Image 1 (tube, one colour):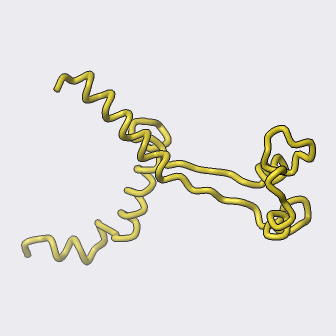
Image 2 (cartoon, helix red, strand yellow; image 1 turned 180 degrees about the vertical axis):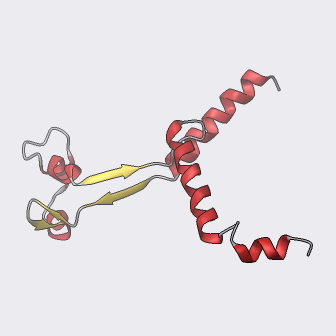
Length: 105
């Protein structure tokens, strides 16, 4: 395969994996009403974009999504650096005990 085809296919694959790893979160209370009661009182007409009640807009204001960042973006590099440094901090690579264990003496 040519390099440009591989780059395009890699971009498509990374984009798909980013969207598959998405997480949807919502607030537990929307306009002072618990989310369960809010959903229980909604009808199918409320989900229509042309609905005059705009109850779906209130619901969507309380919902947010997040996807994993693509591998070549600044956000992905920042996340990777944070993970790397946290693992170094957790496993304490250069403490005195490991230096004594690694040294040939």
